[in-house]
Image 1: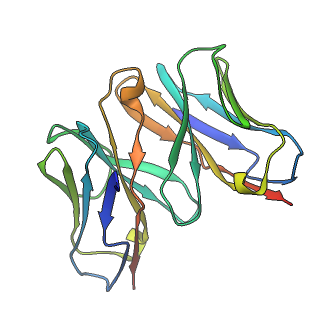
Image 2 (image 1 turned 90 degrees about the vertical axis):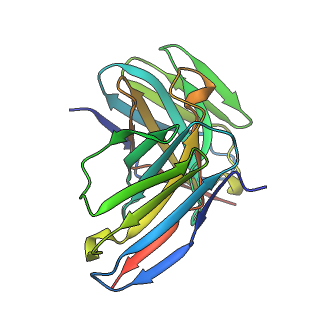
Image 3 (image 1 turned 90 degrees about the horizontal axis):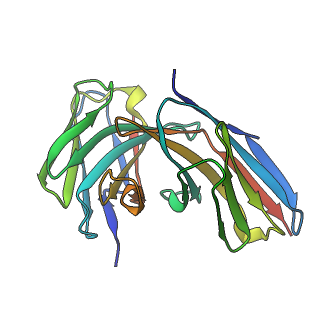
Length: 109
Length: 116
């Protein structure tokens, strides 16, 4: 069964304390792995798409990487404004999107 | 300018009622979606339309019926509302399903439906 799992469920970091969020996937025919940020009361906001193992993308303090089984979202020297829920989603053959349940990140000043 | 808009933002109604949620996108995208996000923040796709044609129809009760009058609009009509329908419903759009930027989805702000 196609599945996307994110860990940890919640993460509290001190400002400046770097860490990584994990997205593990067991799907057939991965076409793309997406990362989104969701703030409370708002819709998900697109961050990155990764298409093949070994690919990396960066945006400000965020860097996303992809292997054949998982993706990581690395957060370097986070700031309080990085606090949000981070969602990953797998797009597979047949145009199906599978979302993980997200990691709730809190960055403490 | 709002790229993907939904109305209403909040919807509180009684069990058994029929309600609609409207969605409009001004991005010129060909594909639109409806998602349901439950209390545990799990997002699940419900429907997808490409150029007014239904292309994804996940296992949802047939009380839910999407309607796309044109490619910029995708409305969701729900009949005989049940308690379990309470959730946040998100509309989204993308350029298409081709690999590349066309797969990026842009989400609306959500509609919080509460069924009493």
